[in-house]
Image (cartoon, rainbow, N blue to C red; front, side, top):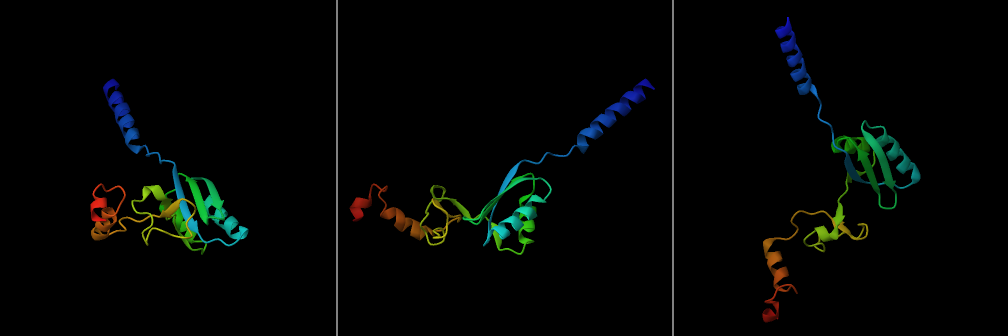
Length: 146
């Protein structure tokens, strides 16, 4: 019984290691939500606070921004926000110094918060890129062209 008891103990120990769930990471999800009044903001805050794993919900009515902190998945947060029948999208803005060309038509947005632009992947075509760098102050050969 000593050997079989030891083997049984070891198999239970190995089995319990496999059954452990991975711990979810703390995430921050930012959403752009069309809100007109304090009632809309309160409705959004209640809807998102009720999700499993949400630690805090911050609503900024001026920027139309809702920030959710917690262990909830971003897709579930987006779905819960859309269930309130408001116009919801992931936060589209990033600081302008992270974008290569912040004043391209697709990136520049008048409604964006200060020092931010819309997040765009590759806004310029290679030909536009070539013309932009041709007349750039950072190009040492630019003075020969002018």
